[in-house]
Length: 102
Image (cartoon, rainbow, N blue to C red):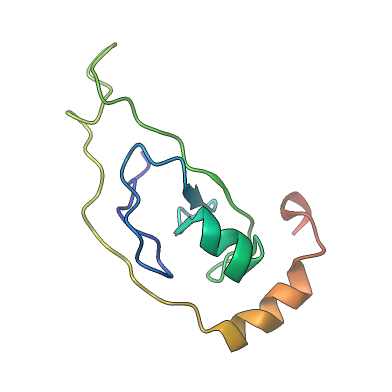
């Protein structure tokens, strides 16, 4: 189950469980849309993968207890600002390759 981490790993912007600005990679590294587009170039600094919008977990129980009340979002913050110089090399190597081909 997705942890729904509360903040962008780079800029520490709040990403509430219903945020449409949250982006995740396949390892659930979590960044805001601005950082993914402007800083990271759709290249995860932790794994080299691409990003997708993070799904929104239902706030209300509409079926079987599958909602935030039963499965709350994580409170664990991972604030690890990206070393832009180090990331630049990874970004150059991967940004021209589609995420599904990396």
